[in-house]
Amino acid sequence: MPSSPLRLFLFILALAFLIIFVQIGLISIAFDKLGLSEESAYLLLLCTLVGSLINLPLLSLKADSEVPPGMPMRLMGWPFFKLSPFTGKILVTVNVGGAVVPVAFSLYLIEHNPLNPLQVVIAVTAVALIAHAISRPIPGAGIGMPTLLAPVAAALFASFLDPQQRAPLAYIGGTLGVLIGADLLRLNDIRKLGVPFAVIGGAGTFDGVYVTGLLAVLLA
Image 1 (cartoon, one colour):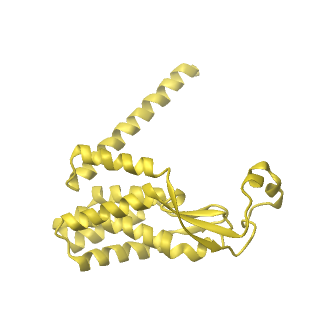
Image 2: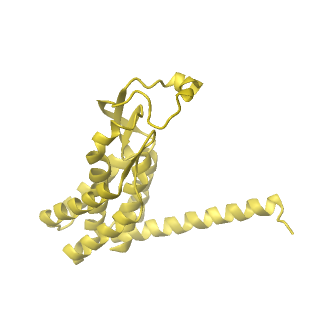
Image 3: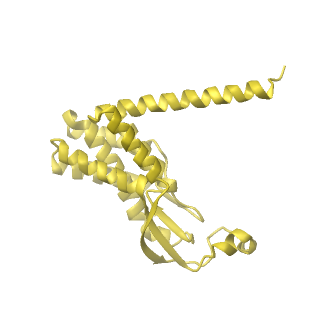
């Protein structure tokens, strides 16, 4: 017998709450391993979520194509594209929640933990190379990458390099590594996408940066 719409709605609502509670629990564990109080952890989370809505202009690039690859020419006549015409220039911005906040928090961890600078460089470089290898430009969209490989790599390198400080080292290596490897080292690829704007730490790599940081700490 098929379920009523109300029962289906209640099931979906309960499932959503369960997922949220699990995520909050995992976030609490991750930030606790980084030495943050509960209040500081939720403040950082709030800054990340609110900051994800804010993009700061950085620079402008000349695109290789005036029409996004793979996008039918007929779409250029739609109202949406009339409002935001693509002129051959790409505005590159920095997402506050996906780039500025993780970088600032990484610098905080470096300042407040006895980390070896050489080990930090090795961890960030290793994850950056992996993130660059597994990330791919998506025509008409941006840069995308699988979610799990970078945090696993960050956790493994951190555990090998400094078992005593593996949690902060995993976060730093994971977040900065993804930003460098999947965003900064892909700036030239952005020229080929034909998109009117690109966001460092946004859209395709926001999950990569945010999830990588948390998972890397949980796995470390």
